[in-house]
Image (cartoon, rainbow, N blue to C red; front, side):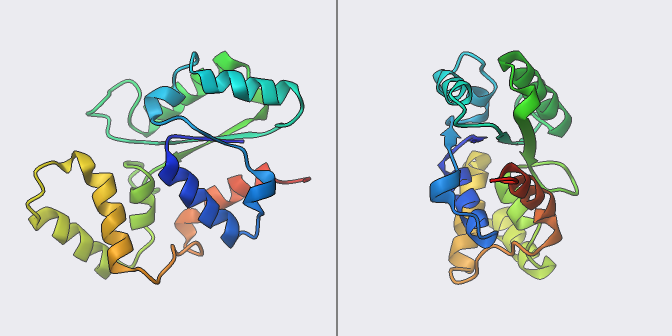
Length: 184
């Protein structure tokens, strides 16, 4: 199973699985929670469903994936270290420790951000600078939609270019995904 925040994460993992030649239709069970705060809520109803699948031997490995986000927006659950602590705590509370792995989406160098930060970290410096300059000089009223804006800019600027899954910044995530399906 892959526990993640949103539909965008699922779409990303489906593309990554295709790149890794993993059949997502047969092997994946996605649990989309609708946000990090819901993933970190042990009472969320999706955990009951997940536990049932584990108890019925339908799932024997789980990959929890959440964004690092900004520590400023939620000091106890955001930021790389805080996110890892909160995620480990919820996994332990649910009794999933033995079968769980985690991955925190962010720029792997700065350990800040989210899925879009990871993607942005894999494009060439000139293209990255171009996108960052556009975001800086744009007159977007709300930078709260930063993730969606980054995603849309990437899709508009590079409509025919898939993500560069060969980039080293994806290596850890690819390894974790491959390990999920080891022995299947």
